Image 1 (cartoon, rainbow, N blue to C red):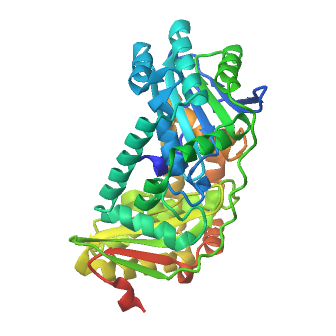
Image 2 (cartoon, rainbow, N blue to C red):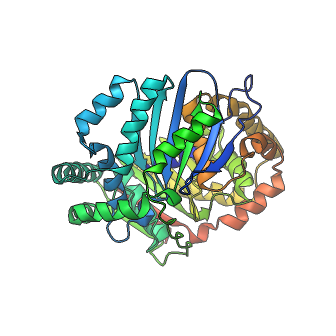
Image 3 (cartoon, one colour):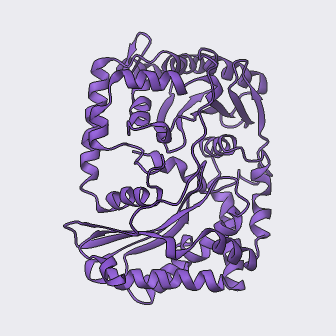
Length: 440
């Protein structure tokens, strides 16, 4: 299950600076209304194509897991081909296809050689997958059972359970509350006709976009986009995801688990994509909990006191307010002490912010590593898809380092105070210690 990993579009990079000052992103629409984002890169002779739809789990309704099942069935049979025939067609031309679902969106990602004959076979295959999925009964039953088994295995992971309970705690009855993969009982209740209806509603041109990065000229990219999206009806965009309101759930959630370790997640909804507070929060969190061994949380909780195996924090912006999450893993008998230090460190940071030295080091690290994370067509396609889907400026990559460098200590303090209130955090504890009983 790679749903949430897709939304690590949050990890930032820049095209190799010896080649690009910043990739030139061009935008247009297909005749039936799909947005197209295109970057030309003549080497190597490959093209990465990302097809993105507002068809994530936030649109499941009460049928949690519906978006994931629908996405999973697309390449299990289409037109006259079963899953094996589809795989053989792609392998015969050296193409690769994967797909996935996050809370806001679903995607298919094709990588192909640009040799005309090979690319034609790859595109014809994906066009059929996209426009004529079979959703055969046997394929549906098999995929449904596979997903149920995966969800049963999830019950054996304290970390995954903590994540699941955390999203429920902070989002309440909002569509972001339920896990992208669904729940065992809801997945079992989904019918094949539900997938067909979901596909017909959300896999339409005006609800989708195409990202093309690689060794195709503009004319070739236009023809490619028209070919892939041209078989889809125009349709309508997905309805807006509701705004996030504070959840009326318990402040503490405890789940006993037969494990030597306790997992603790704490936080709240904080920020949406495109918010002006993003850069102060991004840079500031690198100091607080996102900078690995240099971060304050690691120093205070792990290095000084030896209270955790791992500790970190991050912001995950979504279409609506995504979460701020601070998490740690520790021995059961240290869970209470570790949580206390985590909260104390966060409160002190909200009061004082980073030092000038910490802030300067964070900026150097973020801008210096920017170059290293943006070194392939596939990574660039991911990033351009994020820019397009969330409506960020086309020069976002060009201005990223300048915006990081422009962050001040005062801007960090003000942004953190606006977005975070530890008194409103929801805290999830999965393991052997009822940390909340000692806190209250």
